[in-house]
Every structure is written in C-alpha cells, then in structure tokens.
Image (cartoon, rainbow, N blue to C red):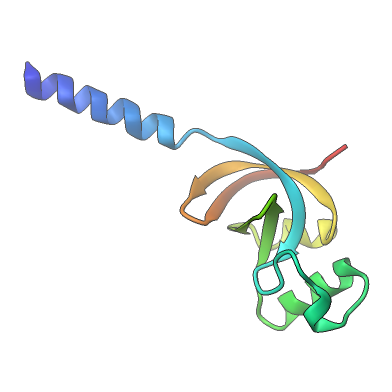
Amino acid sequence: MKTLLTLFAGAALALAAAAPKTFTGVITDSMCGKDHSMMGVKPDSKCVLECVKAGSKYALLEGTNVYELSDQKTPEKFAGQKVKVTGTLNGKIIEVQSITAAK
C-alpha cells in the first residue's frame, strides 16, 4: 500500500512539472540574449535574424532569463518583438506549443 501511494505521489509530481505555462518576453537569439550592442547591427530584430543565420538559436528573453526555443521556425516572424510563448520548460529550453504576438 505504501509503495502504491508513493508511486501515485511521484506520478502526480511529474504531471504537475510537465504542465504547459505561458511565458511573455521578446524573441531574441541565444548568443546576444538581452544585449545586441556587441554585434553593431540595428535594429535588434535584424540582429536576431543575422545571428540565427550565423548559427545562434532563437530564444525568449523573459525578464533577465533567456530560454532557448524548441521551435526554430515560427520565431523568425517575431524576431525582436514581444510575444507569448506557451510550452513546457525543460531546463533552459521551452518545448514550444504556440507563439503569439503579445498585446
């Protein structure tokens, strides 16, 4: 009985940890993150696109946190813009379910 209770408690914690969440921030790239000044490319949206072409990954800047995005196609149209990303956080990577423009 005790083993069964422990199993159910563990499963409940695993499901709670995997619940999707909505993150609001700016689409950036994993190299520049918050500060695009080092690249000398303006505006920031152009810098993001240039960095991704050079091998960087699309990311979400939320406050001071930079999260890499699992979806590397959809963020292109939102480069440098404020968005809402719904997905599951796995370490420093958001497993993206959707990306929409933030109001």
